[in-house]
Length: 485
Image (cartoon, rainbow, N blue to C red):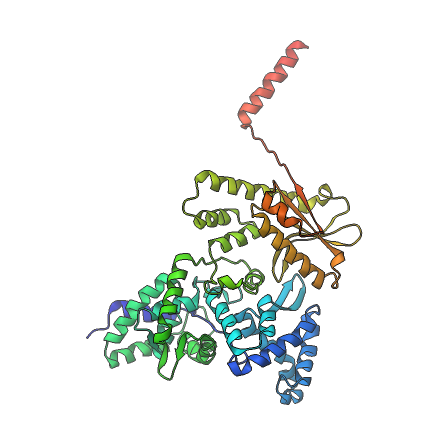
């Protein structure tokens, strides 16, 4: 039989494309290594306020002293200097730790998820935590190279969706050709059809298609990198190691699949994500990892992917008004247009207010000096960070239409982070201000729990008059004054 044109085109197109679901190379993530990773993260916690260039050799030396890296590195200076860096690719993939970049500063950061991983003691608990992280992991994200940006999906859930339509199994050739190329959920459905066609062709025709995949060089990649197939193949061991973290997937000699006992659970995950998962367009690695590293409440561990509410919260925070408004609309299909327009009005007002405050903090409180606008932290971005006349840090957050408990919870986390990272652990050297157009009862109830947070309301009024009409009116007044004189 002839090779179906759609199958041949997909193999050729993907062979020429440089993007695929990428798993970075790094230390092993097998269950045997989890206790060591936890110990390494615990050591890293001692260096979180130290610039990374200075912390890196000290961190590696401490790991060596505790037997947490191989002793031969003592005699290999280049290996010793790089050993600390080698930990981070997988840690970043799992949301455990990363290098926080704030302007010229680069400091190691253990996330909430990383701290939880350290505190958990059993393999089952750690597996549950890491599985939750993989189910919420989105690809593309800004910690990956830009040529992967055609992916807009949650890759593990997308793989489940493909497996559910291919008899719950892919052999390794199928996985490398198709399983690593699922660009969104609808693409999983298209690839399921393509896999069906692949299975219908003869062995010789499959060899012809594999030869295409193995010889076409990808566009926009360095010549020394070779083919995308080769890159996928070289990364396969790392990819399989990460996939084995979950208890849902079967990794065998012939391929990857889902056992009968797990199929119902996987199907529920696929249905849930199809209905509610929302890809969030993060603008920086900092923003993505700040969200991914936050520990979700337990009730969301079975549905951890980002939703329209999560997207709205992020877009509010970075001032993308139209994107936030669209996410607000998608949260509830029945929202009336007037409610959506009122939400947008509040976002516009508070964006204008932030612009004003950046250059005129004295209007809010005498003696305030700006440290940074949209100041990046490991748990999100502070609207405005300032210091008062006595040097106390002041975290300023705009309500941005958020419910009171949400904004209070957010500023409480920022206060803790600033106290630990900037105020040398002195909580008394940090306070907060919340600014909003108005405050509801939920805010008033929540704010009473924070002693060092003040709240301010604002009122911005802007009016417009069409210029020609306004100019004619002024000219008539001038003419009238001239006639009276």
